[in-house]
Image (cartoon, rainbow, N blue to C red; front, side, top):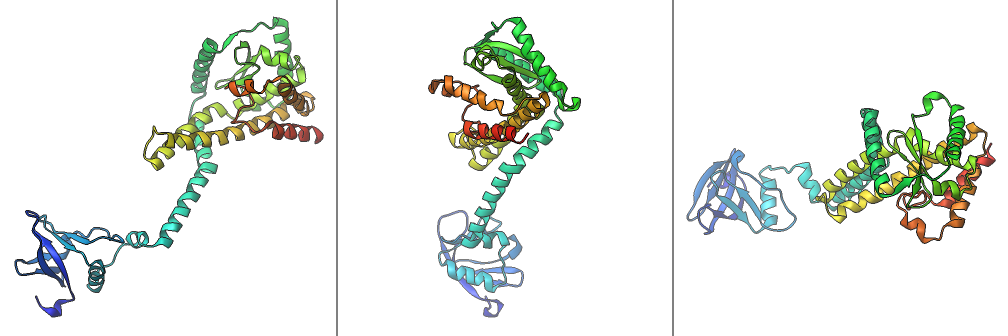
Length: 347
């Protein structure tokens, strides 16, 4: 091995057939790697040598095409030798060895995840819905209503005339809105096992329970506001968006965590969807204001709705009612009352 060929480094040679280490010296000469020792003398093409990524600690290793390998416990000497013979590491490898690059990468990932949560997932959900025919909404809504009727609802006991009066008041309210801004909808009345409630199902069904009508003493303005809120959910397709967003969040969380079924992957999905749900409620509240104003009612009537709900609630019942309006995924009642009060004052 000629000294003029390049710098030397000591290493151990393993032939791939036994665990015996052969002390050798390595030298690069042109496009060849010269391996020389008391029991080994080889010359291999440099482009056939595989150089695993450098780690901060531990021995250095190189693999030869025939299964043999080279090991060097003096990582500093190995790195200096490779640098001296002109070997250059990729940007990725160098970044992995730098705490500054690592920290910057972590910050970038966090920022990307935050941006994806704030804008990416909602945008993707909306884009997906534009390609989803409304017949899918109807099918999902009908299936959901059948399941809810079976487990949680009974036929309404409100007099038919009262049902027609409420539906008529809401029809007059939305008739004042531009027709293209009013989604197809129908109101159904149910006696509920979960207390006072109102909710919208994909496809256009607005469910209003007897208990909610009684809770607000059948106040026409309040019920128009409640139904206007639910109409907002239909207009923005919140139900279908929620399904799309949960799917997207679940996929991202599963990829980040590496497990699609663990609690660790479920928590960010639950927290993320709760945040989206609060935003959806705020959009629906804005729709309620629009409907109330179109009907000639002050949005401030909704303050009385929240006061009525709070006055009659026993505290624990609302937490047990999964479909009730004021659940953890909704904004706080105080925030929503302030919103409607301010909207009423702004008329």
